[in-house]
Length: 219
Image (tube, rainbow, N blue to C red; front, side):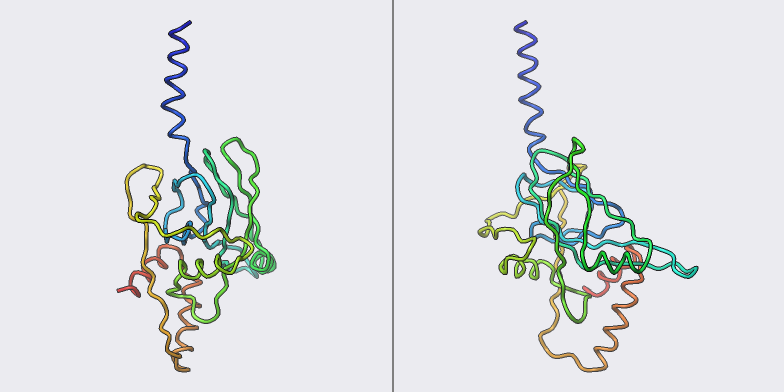
């Protein structure tokens, strides 16, 4: 009996520390942008327990009048409290322009923990007028949280060392991305037209093309 108790206590000792974190899985139809104020580009990650603020976009395809149409949502802010579990996000279907417009106006989704229970969350959109390419999402999130938006989280004091955000394979990865802020100078009219064209083609591209396009711009 003593041996059985010892084995049980040993199992608890070694298993519990591994569970003391939040593992998050986003659908392949999403484009991850930031989590808790840090830029990311992965959809499976692990962070410390506590409030989770995720910024991402939803990409979907639907048919309209016999043609394939690509939908890209506004940047979505999702906030929930995570603790010792794996959380999976499920997005609603987009089957028409009406569904796309409705989602942009009032986004919604489903979050479940490892036990299959629904998790409460807050959701909002991070809107910005003008050019959408090269946005400083981390800076915009900081302003959003300062202004106490619907899905805001409390701003934490500066840390000497940034918290680690790890992929599921537990290999250390530098997922922070440096976004180039837009110039403060007022754009000329011809630049605005070019920017609108870039926004259009960027919205039509797949995720791999978008990533390559961003890397080209940042160079």
